[in-house]
Image (cartoon, rainbow, N blue to C red; front, top):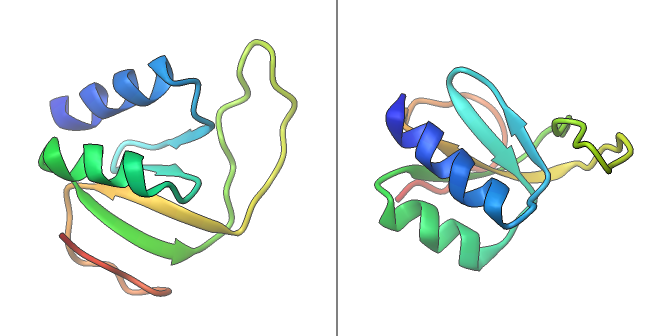
Length: 84
């Protein structure tokens, strides 16, 4: 969606490691970024899930467990959630 594209643009400008899918963006927990995404009209969900960010031009691949998702859907079935 256009909202997810806009969010990916703004997060990319901040050089944030980001997992990108058709339905959601996943990033490391950050309350300032979560507030920005909420102001953009996206749902922010805190979950403990595998994290596979896009490999940037200057970054090595790594994995983390505790992540945020920016998502337009409010139906999720796993992990700890918080919806706006």
